[in-house]
Length: 387
Ligand SMILES: *[C@@H]1O[C@H](CO)[C@@H](O)[C@H](O)[C@H]1NC(C)=O
Ligand SMILES: *[C@@H]1O[C@H](CO)[C@@H](O)[C@H](O)[C@H]1NC(C)=O
Ligand SMILES: *[C@@H]1O[C@H](CO)[C@@H](O)[C@H](O)[C@H]1NC(C)=O
Ligand SMILES: *[C@@H]1O[C@H](CO)[C@@H](O)[C@H](O)[C@H]1NC(C)=O
Picture (spheres, rainbow, N blue to C red):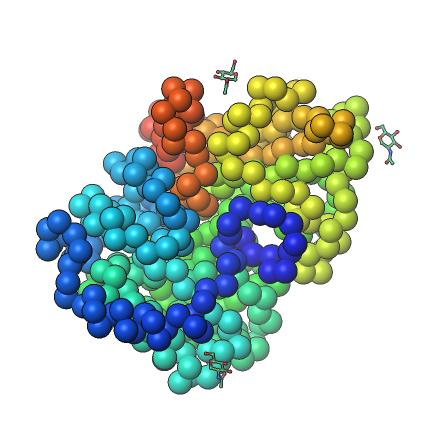
């Protein structure tokens, strides 16, 4: 999720520019201190994970201690987008799960090969000093086909993967891509070369209304058919299904309707984004935990859109304005998870693990368990959908 400069409040997203310009000095110093001193209870918990899971459950974590309540029978990789947490690293390793760094850099900086090498070296050293198992590269910048940045990005991924694999045997280098390879949000990358140059692509199958070219109305964050069609696009470019991890959203979009028709269509203000006249940027991202508290007091309760195969609901704010909220829940996620299994993708994951209610409230606990369970559907459900 990347909409730099967008003024509205949003969930901490994939776009937060890393502070790699200021931080390296400090990190190099701390790296010296940390090297070889394992902070875990047992020395072996500092060893990078070397085994490859048959199926990935790839979790973005944005900090604090929600990870303590994750379903660790499923998690295989945690991309640590929050502050470094020693306790998380030791715990993940005790469960055989990887913890990987976040990598982001302005592409104009790493067109220069010397700068690129320096950035990669810094990340490898950071990973080593923190006993991490790889890196998730989250560059979501607009890139033109054939530009210097276009080639530099591919080189960045290739050289990062080579360095990590040599310096940290068994480590994992992943790269985040938009829901479709068709220059979404002007991200015209060399997707095939990038896929060949890293261990896996995390496909961000959400924010699929970032560029609305048709009617400017509220729609699903990740419509079923559109989501799946885009995987066929990736695969038809000769990208192996085993390179692809499907990312699902654990958040929705709350749109304030300009007009709410009697058929329940919510027209939204025209907020342009990267060339498109209308965008989900007119909505507000809402965690699953918050929506589950709001839905029972909404005007409509949970509704299901048969075409988009997604849930939504309508509510009135204190000024009497109608809002439409589109989201994903265990039903819509299980449909996509069944496709992951049936198409033989490498795994599934979400943005982000922190967005559920991990309190001790029994209703919340059930909802949270249902969300985790929807990631890995049973064989029965799978054949029900695809037979
Ligand atoms: C190298 O990276 C720095 C930021 O660390 C940037 O200011 C500089 O312009 C880059 N040099 C080149 C030649 O791109
Ligand atoms: C699914 O999407 C594709 C591509 O957008 C379209 O051609 C096809 O008709 C859609 N199928 C259904 C059942 O909506
Ligand atoms: C709003 O919707 C109503 C009923 O569907 C329609 O008659 C009206 O023209 C719409 N208003 C605007 C401003 O689009
Ligand atoms: C909302 O209503 C549903 C259906 O009646 C119920 O199962 C659920 O527990 C309710 N949620 C809350 C937060 O009360």
